[in-house]
Amino acid sequence: MAKEMVAEDLLKQLGVEASNAGACTGKWIDTDGPELISYNPTDGQPLASVRQAKIADYERVIGAAQDAFRDWRMLPAPQRGEIVRQLGDELRAHKEPLGRLVSLEMGKILSEGLGEVQEMIDICDFAVGLSRQLYGLTMHSERAQHRMYEQWHPLGPIGIITAFNFPVAVWAWNAAIAAVCGDSMIWKPSSKTPLTAVAVQQIANRVMQRNNLSGVFNLVIGRGSEVGEALLADRRVPLISATGSCRMGVRIAEVVGKRLGRSLLELGGNNAVIVMDDADQELALRACTFGAVGTAGQRCTSTRRLILQKGIAADFTERMVKAYGRVNIGDPLDPATLMGPLIDDGARDDMMNALQKVREQGGEILCGGNKIDRPGFFVEPTIVRAHEGMEIVREETFAPLVYIFEVETLDEALALHNDVPQGLSSSIFTTNLISAETFLSHRGSDCGIANVNVGTSGAEIGGAFGGEKDTGGGRESGSDSWKIYMRRQTNTLNWGSEMPLAQGVEFDL
Ligand code: NAD
Image (tube, rainbow, N blue to C red; front, side):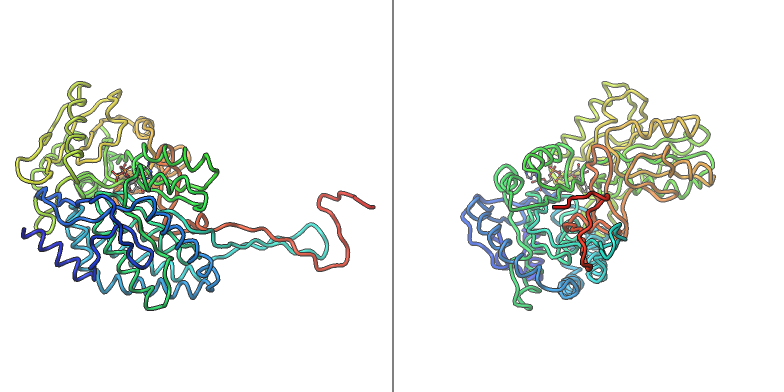
């Protein structure tokens, strides 16, 4: 009851009245779709519920997004940037309750919940600057008195599918950039975190209403198999940006690829840290502990494998095990807590199943390994001594479970490092310049993100974020990631009185 009150109170602070609605075009759609209950992972109790969108609701949403696109693309990009600046300000004003709601519904500790909202604010700031920098190149034409250049045009209404573990930041990575690019959008959030989605939509609604706009930011909460599939197959949606498991990514690539649509895939990771004998061990220990235990191992960039050079392996492992003993596990809203619960019972079962395979495949559990007997979905953070050839290590288990390997050389470490299907984040701890540069070179890490003396977990918005191999190849957030949200047009302009053809082709009538 107390928790229900907290959710209700937070939603009220965020201006959410229509918490029953699961679809929005700027105005909430009064749907009679099936109820979706959001559960608090800390005690397993219901927080609140929303009505899920049905196909008819989806149709209204896509219609609104198409209409809005036609007008939104006509606003000069810096004016779109001004609206995104206001969105950032509205998020600043609501950082505290929204961050709390993220922690309450998803289970990450409060500083991470607040950090997630800060990430939304940061990407809005980035997008405002970007709105004046959607640059195209100019080229020298091979033909006399001709000019060639390229320009970037808005793409259309885009689909944004998000995972439960970053319930609001990933929307913002896509939404802020897509908005300045001139796209309208339809957001399908995870069904495990509908309340934060409703709250963010309401924040965006207020900004748009103040500017007499609607239909740019749209929401559909509903089943993946129903509205999710409708979105994937919809030819009116030229780009699907999707964050989630590799399994989900394969489905998206299949359906969107079949209609020759564009997909931006941000999928699972299997991130490793290499710790060399010459590393600053204190630094490495802090980064590895946060990487493996932070967010209860539920980040795509969480550290899942530690590859330790022989000279420090025993000592480092012992210090990790000791550090795990000091991790305060509990209510994510309690400032003393360092690790909250897993998202649901299914996630706990996945971890226990993985540990069963660890035992069968000859791994040694050095600490943890159990569910915690209290309400909610808590587990012990777990360290496993692993060996090459353990199949389970190749899978992403979305939980605080880390595998430790011992190696002799950097070459051996790199081979082990790259020998998994996923390729998201990676890191090496070393004070040796040659080891560091080798790790970053083309024969080093095969991941989209490679760090030196910085852990695998977490990233700043300024860089392009994403990974290779089964992680899907997509890039979001900073750098030139904006280009996928626009269509490129190459233009050739003749300012002379002749009509020369390229490559010297003659065609005289
Ligand atoms: P998930 O794959 O279960 O779900 C992700 C989203 O896809 C949800 O919104 C879900 O409803 C939707 N979905 C599933 N099937 C669909 C379908 N057929 N059509 C349309 N939508 C569909 O993932 P999850 O458990 O929410 O999140 C955890 C996973 O996400 C992990 O694998 C994690 O590594 C990954 N992740 C990746 C990144 C990244 O940037 N690479 C970031 C966060 C999370």
